[in-house]
Image (cartoon, rainbow, N blue to C red; front, side):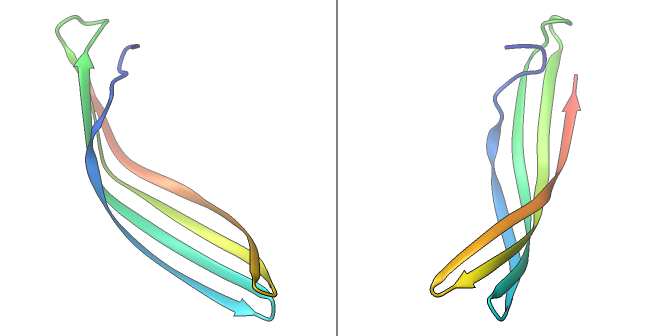
Length: 91
């Protein structure tokens, strides 16, 4: 592995909320997801010998929007969004 590369272990708890509405055959929606996380990892530094590289992710979240078209009993849709993360890296 390279400098600063390591496997992180931990867990996450998630909460999600969203809303969809339909106008004629068009369907619109948005969702927000927030995650409390506790992912941590470390390794010995290749560059500095006995020093440790440490990383931690405390939280991450997603915000998405959807637009679709309902045809009979089928829904065609596209979804896009953005993600954010709260992390820390320490040597």
